[in-house]
Length: 357
Image 1 (cartoon, rainbow, N blue to C red):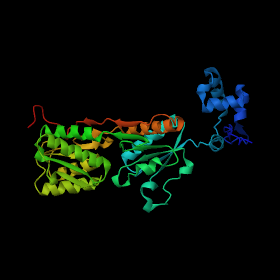
Image 2 (image 1 turned 90 degrees about the horizontal axis):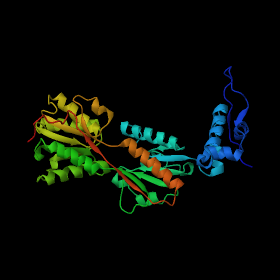
Image 3 (image 1 turned 45 degrees about the vertical axis):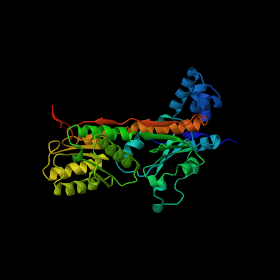
Image 4 (image 1 turned 180 degrees about the vertical axis):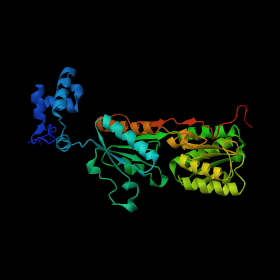
């Protein structure tokens, strides 16, 4: 016997809920169609004529019917839940990523279950992610030491990966073009600053995004005939405090006047900007600064912060769509999306008219 699909009756005028439940049969009776037709409208509307679908949807709206998702999952063997495994769930970057992913999943008729446990097994249960609850999994990878693509590809659920794209990976991948964004930012800084006065301030070595941005920075300097010295590339954390500490040390050594800096993210850049302001250095007259991500705070800083824009909402939507494609079209070809980045020039790095070397 099939489990019933019911939802509570809408509240009565006196504010009390009616005891009777609204079932899928109620919708069928009101719209004058079979239960099977109602089910098709709710699950595969493309199989039903527009006129019939409209009639059923009107009945659903009038009755306030909501499918019982648990009962539905027993029938279809699908939860319509997508797992999302992130390195962290704090900060503007992850908030924007999840907001966009949740909106896209909702548009496609899915729900998200988000966790960071699998990235921090020492801090939580050893099972990492409850794979028995989800139809598929989106995994974001940021650390080279934790990239085990064979193991991820071997999971018993479809997977899409954000952050890694390596040849031969048999799963959907979504990345942003760190190299082009960092190269354009470095070329912009080199237009007004000698290469020996340019610096890169990144996260710790082994972070995939930071390493790619550092490599593009160094290669762009080499293309100008300058092999960067060790002091021109610094590695710490994606944190305001690291940018502040690095800048304070360099200012004390007299190295930041007439310099240009590419930071691996906006938090590092803001730490550098605040330290420079604390020590009386002006942007862009004394130093020019570009961040990475183009978060909202870039436009709130004074002067406004130049930054490389990472298409976070597009990455989220692409990841959700990629995973649903694997769920609904399992035999389709695996795709590897690389989304473009773009340099947004603001006052923190802008050259005066006619300025340059």
